[in-house]
Image 1: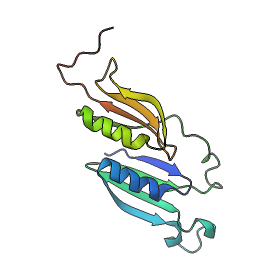
Image 2: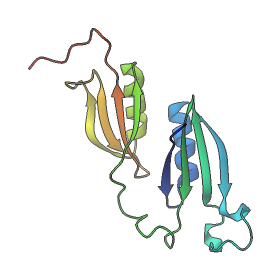
Image 3: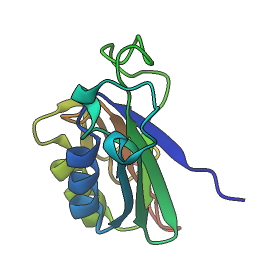
Image 4: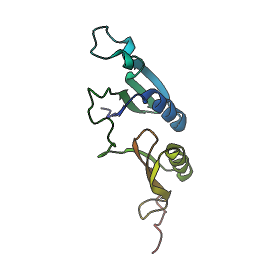
Length: 147
């Protein structure tokens, strides 16, 4: 079994997934625009270049995405909430690099830094409106900061 998060966008899916591939070192393996779908699809011509399906592989992990026309996603313009895409690594420098890159043009909600559970953690909303948490998995000998 593989659980894959699917992200929704309003016309920015291709740009977002190219960005995520570059930041995370992955590869977009599928990107199908609505214009390549069956001619009887109930999608307006203004959406022909929007993606109805996109797939990004990063190692053995994946993220799916699609552009959602407003008539099919009435809340697509509202902030995304109730989930985060979360990255975990044992390498604090890698975690910080991901955090810095993903936060460019976005909003940092918690600056990357040491916490009581991690030598490096931060969360943000990227420039596409997607919430992320970036976490460093502590080594066995790591001790949280003292008081």
